[in-house]
Length: 264
Image (cartoon, rainbow, N blue to C red; front, side):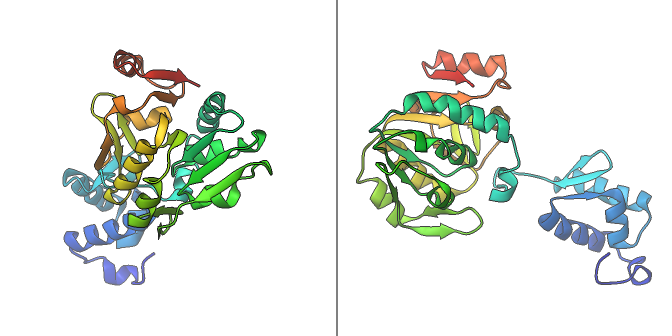
């Protein structure tokens, strides 16, 4: 229940109820019909109509028994949420990426949960030089004692454990690595790779430029998502590694562009 009691809330006008529900969804991401009814002190029938009204305005997406906040192109899950999604597939993708790494390689690991999964295997190699702007990777990754880790400077983006900004780009622009591994918020096989925030685009462009071989690590769900800001065309990647859930039509588009598509 909210901070007011039900007796006071029964006469709340629809606009106010919609505001209460929207504010709740911004924090909780989803709401059931019962939760909406309790929040606004109304019947479940009224709550259902409120959710239908918000859905018609494009604010929420109706689900069976409730609603979720409408995830537009600017929506980005926080890091903790990303870590709960498609992790078995992300680990398979990471394992498939290992064949491109050898002792003595220099690599860049972009921000993302799939690149984080890849970092868990790098202790197997000797004399690696690993660059990253991902603070989770920097903190958690274990390397062979012959290998080295370089963390870019920059401004920390809260809740995402990554470094961004001019300092980050300036450092990346000064290096050239054998392989850069990137993640994506969304990938359209025709239009390109997209990110949910403009703040990361410049850094990702620098990472792509610094890699002799450019590899995108992405689970199949990213091919059905939309995101706000374009980073690059799909042809800028030499290799795309994804999982078995990718649709056949998407596979054909990628292959026809001359990109090496690997299904983990």
